[in-house]
Image (tube, rainbow, N blue to C red; front, side, top):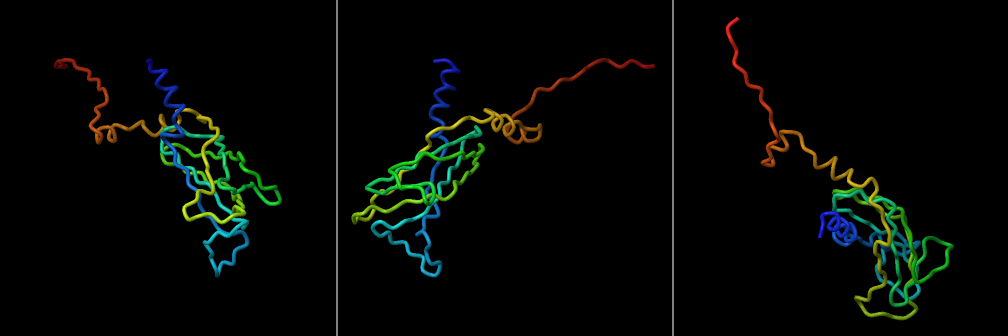
Length: 168
């Protein structure tokens, strides 16, 4: 396999290998802040956001995520949109090297039936993405000055000019 084939495979696997996705800020819509209820009841509407962390070397742009309801849960981008089984939303742009992008608020409607503890209600994964400006993060953040390189045990090439000096 060539280096180009290896690079293409790494790009295909990039979201799987280099990103993490979290569902965050889950709370009941119009919840009383003095009573932060965490018990989900049948057919209640809850809101949430998605956080994508890019741990790799490439900047990611135009990232869309697929948000799917599970076990009878439905989702929507915003009110008054209809609740559906899944949506594709995005334009998240986490830079490489630990960059984080957080979505706007989405909503889900709990299933109409009682579900046991531990029931998965939502599934989110990267749907599409671009490498942005490609290797900008890699090239700009992994070039070192001489002192930084020396700290890593790297010696940059050196040149010397040698000549005999005669009396004037």
